[in-house]
Amino acid sequence: MRSIMHIDFNSYFATVEQQANPRLRGKPVGVTGGDRMKRTVLGTASVEAKKFGVKTGMQIWEAKKLCPDIILVPGDSDKYLECTKRFLGILKGYSPYLEVFSIDEVFLELGSSDKSQESRTKTLTLDSSDYVTIAKAIKSRIRSEIGEWITCSIGISYNKLMAKLAGSLQKPDGLVVIANPEETVKILDEIALDEICGIGGRIKVRLNKMGIFHFKQLRQVPLEILTFQFKSYGNFLYNAARGIDESPIIPFYEKEEIQSVGHRHTIDHDTDDLREIKQILLKLTELIARRARAKKLVGKTVNCWFRYGLHPRGEYQVTSSVHPGGVFTGNGMQITIQYTNDGLEIFQAAWRSFQSMWNGVKSG
Amino acid sequence: MYKERMLEILEPINVWVFFKGGTLQPHTFFWKQRQIKVEKINLVHTTKNGQSLTYHFSVSSGGNFYRLAFDTDSLKWFLEGVEEG
Image 1: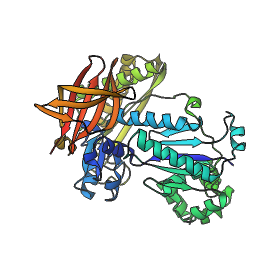
Image 2: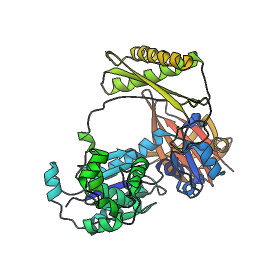
Image 3: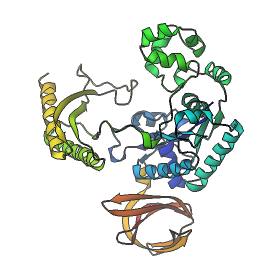
Image 4: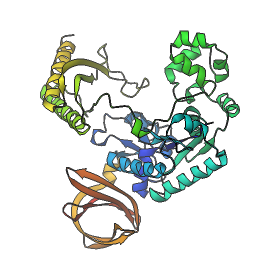
């Protein structure tokens, strides 16, 4: 049986800010997108803010409504990347099989030093108490080498899906082991469908419409019906309901090549000033070209996308219950050019796309 | 709003430093004719501006918060942010 550890930093950006500035500790903090505060969403809400119902990804006005005393801190990506680099440095010492899932979330497979996936799955001999000892050591090193305020939740299990679920069961600063499939079934039967990574709100609604509200009910649905309803995703649902996940750890040195490079920017006011829009687009395309050149990439497909504040009916929508940014209507267009990583060439293609869409919006 | 609590500045300052475990750490800095002893370094991170590397030290003293920056290109120290009172 494999042994996977999932490490998830709690309210990461907010916790790092609280680590840097102790005057923020114990207070509700929301990390925002810097100077573009009016339009952005919260990148992270601190543990204290979450107690008021504030959630990561929530619009700022909503957060302020729930927690008027929330302290908004402009995000500082350099600070967070530095902390991420440091904790990756710590974790690499425990196993080379380290998958970076996001800036604050990793999977670590412990065991064999042989690089093949097959041997990794066969040679584990440590029992769960050894893993708990390792997890405690990791927590302790994070506290001493990065900062005493920074905590993480660790989940340990026999596959990635269950390790992630284990990590989510106790927050903040949790440590949960799901040791075997019997425990998995017990836990699955106590949680909601969307508590598992991979089942979102929309899938939950579709399952509910089929009369499925719990994993116990999901396990009773034959694979054929799930694949008929959800196509290949039905396989995932079938396995998830049983805690089965064969997906391998993909270490950073085996990651697939980058398929695309993109940038987006939200401005703090409405505009139809083409000069201003052109300036923003030029900056964005130059950033894209710079990143592409740094990664020694060239591309030929330019996708330009923008959003505007009016609902199609010509009215402002005031709810953001759909998803952050759901009050806006978007428009996008794709154009193919010669392979390039030149900022001006990318800009010219993007500007052509934008003008075409803009004229359509104006005339429509 | 945090920005209102935090005074953002970029003022050259004098700093006494020491070396611990081979790394440079600020010990005391001088600002507005005050000598401020660093009681705790909460977080250190770096930024790059072109080739120039800057170390940022988020520090505490007397319940106040300060952010110091050391520009490795010019070997100068700056006070970047202050939250006092």
